[in-house]
Image (cartoon, rainbow, N blue to C red; front, side):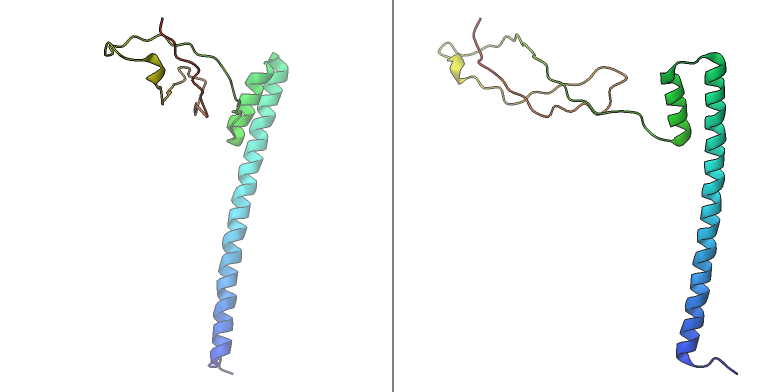
Length: 129
């Protein structure tokens, strides 16, 4: 009996497509399982070494995070006061109350700090000294 019926042909093609997708997913699942087993073994070895050599917790945590490909960075907010002393040339009739600072920019100069962003700033009274 021939499958010349258009609906049956489409159904057969759909079945073949689903079988190919299932095969691909099974392959991906196997690869993930192998990778997970490798990660588990690496973590087991790290923990055994840490116990045998009394390695500190931070070193163990960083090693495990490396194996799992995860970040242990945490976000914190800080508040600090900045005092600025500046000099400038102004006209003789310049009124310091007309002086306005509109932008504050800072950079973190520390290799352990990523993504330092000034969220807000406030500038108090400007006084002539």
